[in-house]
Image (spheres, rainbow, N blue to C red):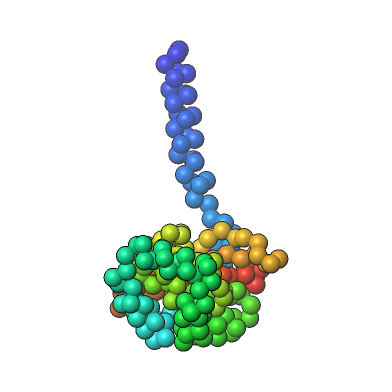
Length: 189
């Protein structure tokens, strides 16, 4: 009789263990519409020459940076080094991203492009730091390789429900950087 209860208990535990991963994989309701918006409205222009050239130039410029140099640059950004900020916020890529944001009808709330080291290359709005490689947005896009789209959780920002969607930037089937977009999920409905 103890064996029978033991088998029943084991089966119950096994059932819970099998059911748990399926529950954990449930998708948040904003993921599909945000992904669809990015696929239809953003992916078609991610191979624009302005983006590819800017990212490749940044990759080349940052190729030999040591980690302590990246940290130093990040600290300068956080300390509001205006020359460093202007080099990112006032370039052709940033102008391109601002135009795309404005054309989105409020769906895109921000956009910033990162190189293969996780450093910002261009952006529409300020970011709190320059170096993104220590964050999921870079790790789950550039770090995942070509074709990756990472949709983060929804957060409140200025009364809006915003998700960040990050996508790998690819040149000739090779990941060269990443881009993150703030998406107003209420504008997707």
